[in-house]
Image (tube, rainbow, N blue to C red; front, side):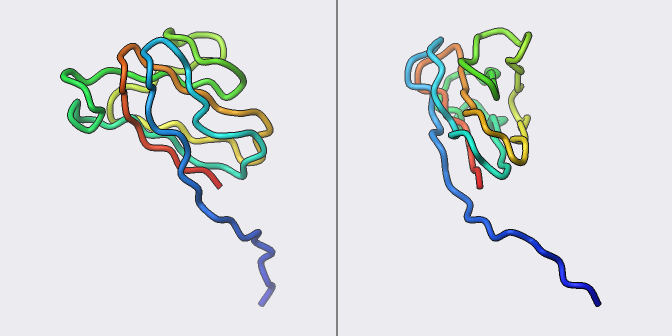
Length: 105
């Protein structure tokens, strides 16, 4: 039986809160083997009174609009980082203190 040559990876937690609404945060560095960013479905898990989307950009500063290289992730949605991605991933949200989950490897 052939042996699979699978690289070993260690999951790492990234930055998981937009401190100041409208100001993107670096969620994961460049040169990752993959990962994910999840926007919690419940407002309480986001640390907010009302659930809202987050915005993710794999190539620069995420804006507050889903267009170009910024993608809107609604509550309960997940962004999968690109395996072998060399650029950092940023996240933005409208409200101060918006929490989300991020793991990369």
